[in-house]
Length: 71
Image (cartoon, rainbow, N blue to C red; front, side, top):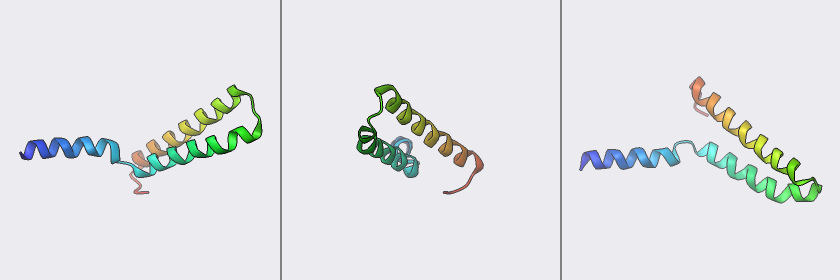
């Protein structure tokens, strides 16, 4: 039973480990959904903006974890 609990805790931790990362991704996607159509940009430019933002969020999260800063 202890092993099963440890496994389930680890699996849950995979998805809930970094709430800031998940929140930033959701915020970026919502902002993109709400704001990008208002600018009237071609599809490729909007897609690149979403991609660049998500990569930036991911890099920031990785650097934060690597440096050991809590938040």
